[in-house]
Length: 399
Image (cartoon, rainbow, N blue to C red; front, side):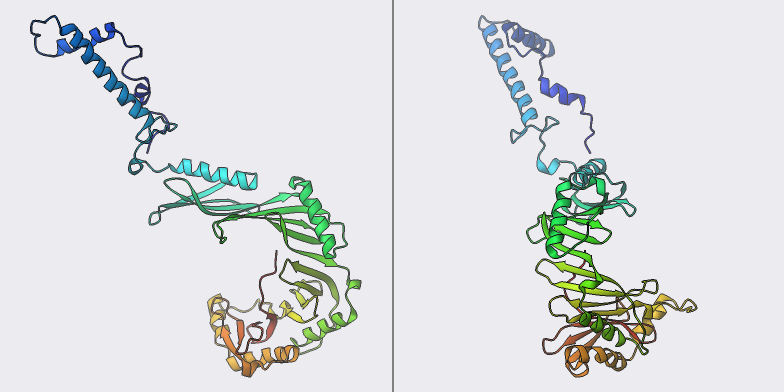
């Protein structure tokens, strides 16, 4: 590795072999005197010797000057900050500290703030280095750099900001778009989160997302363009037929009828990817209970009562034992339970027309794939084989 301080001979190489660059007969004579003292005794000089001596000195000085120019410009003629350009194969890799500085400059450029350093790891096989920066719950960054050049291969980072740090135009654009979507609140901004991702998009461009949040709404802009949003609606804006359909869907999950109080209505929209409305029931302390509909067609997309999956505090089984038990549940029983909802809501025959697929990474979650192009369905079951969540699988529509 090259030290930050340059060796003394670098400076000498810049100056050349003589402090005074002017070439004179006196300079040539000094060179000749030194040559004579270091060689064998001189032969009797002829009358032409002084002129030959001057010519020899000139040649020596020209060669020395050429060597100095080579050291300064290098083979390609491009001067580096250190004054020397070495062949590519002789270049040393950047130090870890230099790589950290590159990463920190990228973070500062993309997020506008610093993040505490956590670790640096070299990938010997790829010649890359991975750097991680983290500030608990406030900011995170992971970068992958070329260890030799410092060029970024990929990075992902995010940071949370208070309302005072958000650009006023971004807030104005967010409020205007939300009102266009149907939001009627004040949009009193509480903060924002900035996400930056590089190296994974098809065109290898930087993707920057700004999520601006308020107590009752949030909106996402990606590279300056609206992408998705959610906001609370007044319960009076929901038609009675939809409220009744929500209660009926919840009743399909339960063996007994419960009176559910509608407490919250959330609308979720995404540019070119659907518009949904979710009705929430209860206070949420026993787990979320909700039904999600397609906003345009009123078709049921999700039904969930997470209170049905509350863990038994007296259950001493390990997570591994629970997973094994969930995966061992009888397929026929699981499919029959899901069919009660699917067949009624969508007019399908889940037992005959769908294949059941168990999800080992997520025990208890079952996927039902259609044989004839119908919607893919996911269902989640508790330890007793009771279904507590039913969903039509679709592209992610979350912030």
